Amino acid sequence: MAYGPHPEQYINVYRPAAAGARPVLAILVHGGFWKAKYSVDNALTREVARALAGIGWHVADIEYRRVGHTGGGWPGSNADVLAALGHIRAQLTGIVPAHTRAFRTVIFGHSAGGQLAIWAAHHAARARSEAAAMAAIAEWPSSELHDLARCALVPDLVVAVAPVSDLLGAARAALSDEGDAVQRYLGGDPAVDGASELAASHASPVAACVPCALPTLVVAGGHDVDVPAEIALSYARAHGHYSSPATPAVATLLIDSADHYSVFDGRSAPFLEVVEQANGLLRGLDEQGRRESGAEL
Image (cartoon, rainbow, N blue to C red; front, side, top):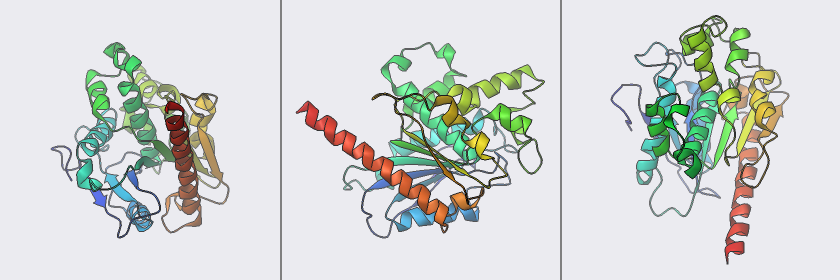
């Protein structure tokens, strides 16, 4: 399912063989440190998509332009995820059958995809809120991102698995196999380049994504050396104190035994724990919805 003219702008759709206990649409954003050599067709992401379809969930797996593609990196990769969410919103009946009863949507992002998932979901929620819609577009990185965000689907839940939550911290730690993934994504080193530092302030979940009534689960593996738990959980440390009926606290899940890959492997016990935690949060949203419906009556 194409959502744009570039060959990397498409969505793989997985349909369940049988209905699950609850109707859910899972939207996946793969990782790979924003690099072109890591695609949506990697075995890890395919296995997660199949595992979720296997429990009865509908799955939309997003591909996006990455560093090495024209327009990839900041802000193009982010714009692509927003555009994909807009396309999913517009084409829902092509992904989830029209007769399916009310369903929940969850966006899962792994590693760099976790950063993109947090960023896109929270900016979509911000743009769709009445107050933010009236805010000056000058507050946004660009009017294009603002327009894409206003059209994007806003998920019910964000699950960020080993996310690169703090871009400045990740740059200092020289994360990735070549040690410069963040610098390539931003277009320069934020430690010495002002434009890249500004880009990091717009793109880093720690700096740019204050929770706005959008439940978020941040997952980290205790043995993750690719995106250490300290960086993954930094979003929760920065924003977890937000807690009110309108702005729920950010939940965290630290799986001591997991590394960067087992925590997002559809066949692994750590990933089953992630899905169980997500299901629990979805049940909480259902219960909250029933209470609110009863209060309205």
